[in-house]
Image (cartoon, rainbow, N blue to C red):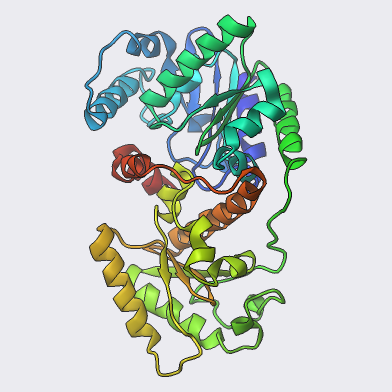
Length: 397
């Protein structure tokens, strides 16, 4: 019955975009001998009993007795090999990179999610202070660190200190620029805890994002009735002057990347110029990097100037970004017009839009806690170069 309960709670949160997107988040159930944890990159909304990787908890515990290389790349590669070896006989799926963390949290069920509302707190300048004021001794705060082995090690040490101080186990763990872990011995308690967490944070929010009149399209549906201009779009869209340019940009980006998509609504206030775009100019969490890239391309262009060739302007900015970063941009913001995504497939392009929209929500929520706080460049570089995250992205897209 416990695997069935794990599937149910996974689908419950996985089907709600307010809690998790794409292949993000992970869940687990464990007994004395075995950990069942979600496979890497798999969508929580679509899991079945076969989606979970069964792992030998004795073998996982032995990982803590080993000494690993100092180099992050060598260390994570060695830890991954040991985690793969800890799978039960016949299991072929790759476990979530957070399997070690799920194993050490002392509750039967663990649900790790990335709600934008929660990350409005964890990705803010006053996040730790706000968490302490809201939750007191009922939660742990983990400062930003590399996911995987290092994160699990930091949580292990923090839980030990917590138990020594409060003589109880902690069920709620907030992770800076990452998300939240909640543990309990019953999935109903998991849900009660998440309801309480969301309610308490929501009570502190001074402004909510508004996507009520969202406009979204791809080249295949550009100009259709379903992609009509929303009433709160930028003036360039509301008066019809930007519609042709949107289609032109979509086609140009598709030729550069394979597929593209467009988003407009709440973002209007953010794309007036570079300074207003700052709260969206870097990465909040690993998921944003994996699916939407670590750095959007912001293009300053006068879309009213008919003498400007959009195709040439996009190509020039694209090539400059590629030369500077060594990566193709996944998110392209055009001043005063909207935000576009570019990826190899339409599914990947739409996922990039979804994660950028999530970043917009996070940015708005951070206003309640001192403003946006991005991941450090060191952490961003780690995620960009980590094989584990490339694998997760490939499974999801």
